[in-house]
Image (tube, rainbow, N blue to C red):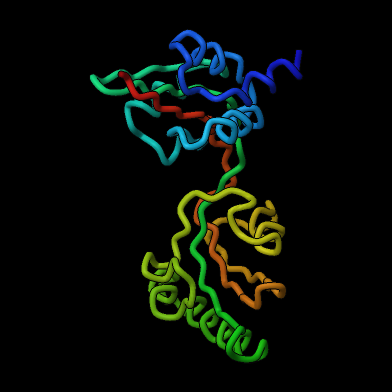
Length: 210
């Protein structure tokens, strides 16, 4: 049965009737099957993406969160039909941080760590972390005061995840992470506790209407 499903996905969609397309979409039940479907039907307009309940507040996102895994929504215009198929739902650990990055790629590890210690001392003396991040961080979040927004394990490096997502680091207390592989030395402030947030993984596919 599984071989039959894979064979169906490998057939081109050109010339398929509406019912055949929807039958294919209905048969997809995992993100892996969705990836096979997308690969087999290039260059058709499709993609796989994830909605996060804390980040995505649109009407479409709300409708998708209210659907069960396997649910499908169709939006039709005069020229195309867009299908949204929920292929996975899960509660995932997220947290929020402010980070200051000290990059040792163009300097020494000792200098980067020394600069980090000076900034930590300033924070302990009462300077606001977001101000310190804005003026001293060498990372892309500097202009946001170091704010990462809600992130999960895997969004940063393994070295970052191993320490930052530990329950041993309380909210609003600064701690350090040494990412030796990438030569980045972090000063980190956890601003939200580790929180389970619902995610839905959605296959989006658009079909032109003749």
